[in-house]
Amino acid sequence: MIGISSGFEPDVVARALAAEQTTGTWIRTPMETPEMRRNIGAKVLGVYEIPDYETETPKEGLRWFIIAIGFPWVNFESDISVIFSTITGNIMAYGKIKLLDIWMPKEYLKLFKGPKYGVEGLRNLMGIHERPFIVAMIKPCVYYPPDIGAKLAYEAWVGGVDIIKDDELLANQSYNKVEERVVKFMEALDKAVAETGEKKLYTVNITSDPPKLFDLAEKAQELGANALMVNAVSVGLGAFKSLTEDPSIKLPILAHSIDFAGTIYTSPYGGISSTLILGKLIRLAGADMNIYPAPYGKVPTYTKEKYIRVAKYLRAPMEGIKPTLPCPSGGITQLHVPQLMKDLGVDVGISAGGAIHAHPMGSRAGAKSMRQAIEATLKNIPLEEYAKENTELKAAIEAYKKGSLAMMLGL
Image: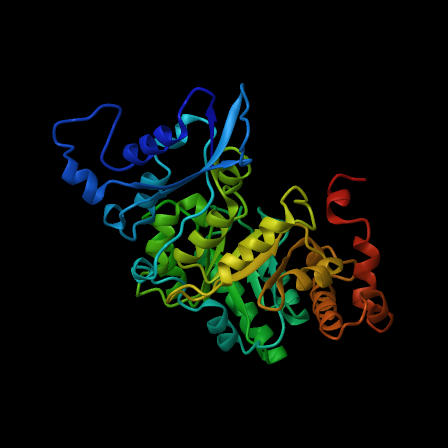
């Protein structure tokens, strides 16, 4: 989508965009032959004005167009870094221009490996087949020793959480190193598994600059970690894809994309659509699970339509690419579970931190109340009704009834 000033011919602008991102520059050069332009130059497939004026056009200001451009994939193959440079390269500096989508043919998709596990693989791994997963991040976010975090994780696991993740702010800081954290958390995980009989995952955050990212992945796996987590957009989707495609890494990988990605998609007039950066591209890069913003809690500015569409991009049929588990997050509480499941179904990871660990009866009760909220929803029983015989859920409803955004702002 691009805003074009009155006086510029849209078809000419479209051809200029296509040339700029393949063979051309601002002037024709001797080696840019007609044959080269035919073989590897991008082609304008369509120019569509929005609104679709028929009888008159605005005399001043910008006119808005959807421009469809076809790129020969020989120019970038399956390198996500080069895809960005090609499709969203120099032209993104031209002003009001936003990439809305990328359509990829079946033959091209065969170049990607995608998630190792995907939704079905995670369900088989954990033996969870008929309900949503519960994902919980440790709170506070940072500056706690590994043994304290492990105790919180144990309480949450025993209460009913399936997957514990580090907060995105905690990576490999000196006060809480990945090596120490993996050992402590996996000891707690083994204890929780023995007590509950349920399989559990701990996604340790190995986010770091390459090559340290890959060193931490190997170290975590050697120490017994059973899953990994990466702030995927922050490290770069190219680096993230290299990690997920590494045959020596056998573990499920959770992408946290709720943070830095906001700088890319939030403008309606520039950047890249969230359905791409949080959905299609994260999946192609190989995320088994993806943390992304939900519109219910503390991120109400994110539209429900985009939120649902991201989940569709993560799970829709895609040639040879396994579905990624959508993990909506951001102030999710037990009260949001019915609407969340109505919107996204059961192939989802309901992700909450504060609603688990700030529960007035403790982290174990917080986890238990989240499981109770899921049970009630699956049985089509209103939460308030189900809470009459489930004290943990009743306490959660009372504690969080104001809403996470209002509570965060002290309202």
